[in-house]
Length: 451
Image 1: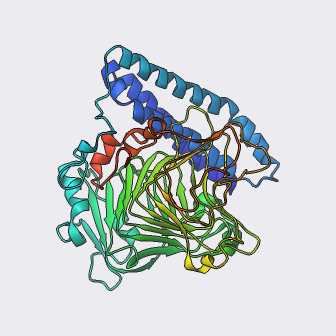
Image 2: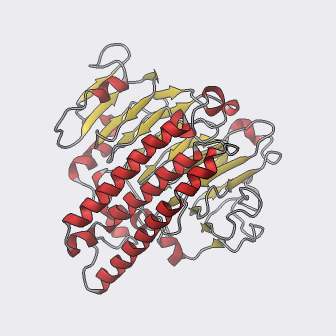
Image 3: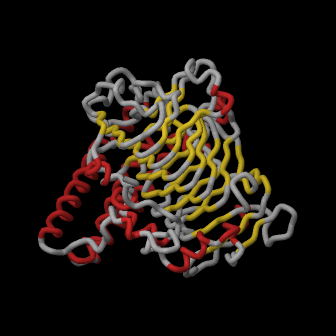
């Protein structure tokens, strides 16, 4: 099964390499400079797919080290190309070929309606519509037969060929027990529901019960670029005994989730590849429940730590950045990290950490967020002994709450309490090149820092 997964994943990797080569081959210096961020995203996705393949094998499998060794040259070459592209970008800037990106620290990027000024008019209206009343869908899904389709999968299967613009799917209130994939050939899907507690997509696949690779347990999968979800819930109900059990897996570049819920236990949200933005969401889980290999910013959201099994401890994040020049990592900005009600009484007995390093160059930044008192004073925990502690990047900036005190944080040289200038590079405007693409989604966004 893991080998079959690798065939699929490496096909994705080849597609990203082909797209990258095609872009460079068809571009002059000016257009290449303007699209450096896309190249970096695509090449970082190649690394993500390779690593997803490796992670599909059990640690005791005799095949795993063979597969890992087989990727060494490919990973290092891809990382070298990423380094070259970064250097090329700096060179082009020095030659006066500047990125056409506004200053991401400017609060003037917010227009009078509260949306960034660079959002497209059409998508701005889609996400700003109160109650979605002014949104005209291409497809309506309803379990009672009042729409064109009874399942979300059927509506996605009806995606029109030669589509221009967005394919809009309205999913009426209900609990949809189905496994949904928006595959790579269906870009620019906008799906919205009646609220994340009313319109719910639910499943229960897990590693423990079904023997599936983690990435294959997802209830909902967004692979096609430009995916947007609003006011909808994604669940995996396998519970803590299911171990790895993903509610939502995303490898869609320039994807946006607004007012959504992702509920599970271990491995709830997999930000698998490329650039992703989450705003006004609720994300719940126990072990490594926000994890992945892509570049994700979670903003103005509620992160709820649930009660795990008796023999478990909680870790909010596990970032899988494998190579030094990959433009990936996880940023949690202006969020609240709190215990669920069932955990409150025992919150000091069950250790909860902000994260642990899944891969060699794991990168996670938590800034301007409220951390409840149940966060361990050390803040972060190792993956295994001293593994990756010399190469990871963990940072905190201007957090608040009883769990935000950094006086007793881990003493690793790779953990730091950063200043404002360093924090700016992890805002949505800079880390995701948000000023260049979130405009195509229309969600409210804080591009810079609050203060």
